Image (cartoon, rainbow, N blue to C red; front, side):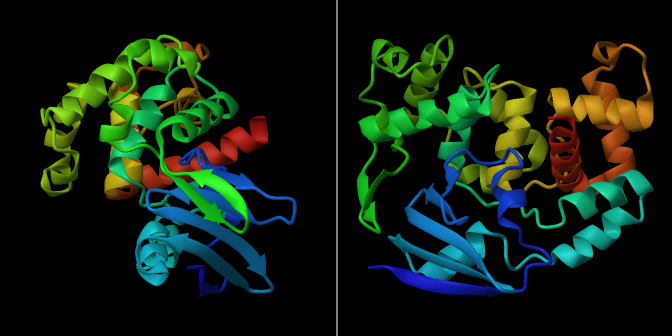
Length: 287
């Protein structure tokens, strides 16, 4: 049954900032300016209306509880932004540009497979592969007379062979997705128990999975486990950190350790949030 939840105020909630800052792949802008997204247990629609955000959806759980958790609404983003803004003008400007970013609390299984698929890939193609995979193996759900498909569970995706995954357009990632799915099904890693582990241990365990390198592991931890201290590094993050702070003539010579040390030194336990503001700012300005 369709439900509705209203979020008051938009100072810390901007649809474009949230859904187009690189953290999610299953939200799309509709013709009326709203965004529709498939989450792990339903479909949500978010629309700005005056100074409110109207969330409607069909979920397997209470919509209010889903929205509060998924959009991280119990976290004080004014406090976060104020703390980061005093670091320097670069951080202050990036926050001003992406003031409405929030870190979504997404399902760890979905983040694991999605970010394996994201390796050396572009966002339109990542989204297309995930949609095709979901429509092939996921559960069908109807919302506002349109058909959507939930992200496939490990059991559902476990039915696919490497060849089946290749047909979805995964390329070299097909074997990695296949092997990681089998490891999860054999309980060689319990993803949902990772929430209780220290960040260093979580990273070690994730890096044992095929297709999971340091950047993918950090993305999983930031977007599924709320580990705000991690600092995922991709080409845009390396570029903005080099341009603003390191100033190496050859950007490619800036190494990951140097960037991680700088991020920890400057942003501390909010490095992941700083990364999102910087990433969105630099990518949008440089696109």
